[in-house]
Length: 257
Ligand SMILES: [Mg+2]
Image (cartoon, rainbow, N blue to C red):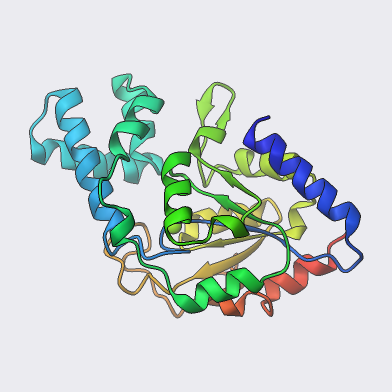
């Protein structure tokens, strides 16, 4: 059974057993949403990708760093640029760049977020542009794995012969079909605004998690005004304890079936 098929079965069975109003189906980003990826993980991944690019494309360190950033800014994922322009194979890249020895000891999450996740009603899924093995490793190390019904990782985001990670709206539409719930019952919790914009367009609720952004020097949110709330963001929060009472959660509970 694929992870997506597993997700469908889990939500469908759960939905049948619950009485209304039903809780939201929570879709959580991983890095800089559930843990402080800027503390160490992003730096480790960046260095690992630079080494991979330098070795694979036979370029120097500065060129490798430039290409990593350039493809990430242009395509939303360094991997997509490497696949398109250099014939890099996704499984090889994802494996080699996420070996990350010693990662577990350097992961940081907030105890209040862990407590809030443990108490939060509703099915929970990770939706990450990172590889599955990395996501599972992070969840295990932080003690979160048992609270999630499934992990939708970048390997699950193939459509029409191409990888279509967040913020691809087609991938998000397919995801809600696979989960067998209306988009309006789903709430995406994310640090990345571009992903929320796309999620809102397909009808999901959106929560902008900001706890780790202040310390972030990585990602598209660098330089964004954290006190502003774009129209496609339902809630702006600094801790996961705010999720259960959020506008996005109320909206999702009103959505039937
Ligand atoms: Mg993120």
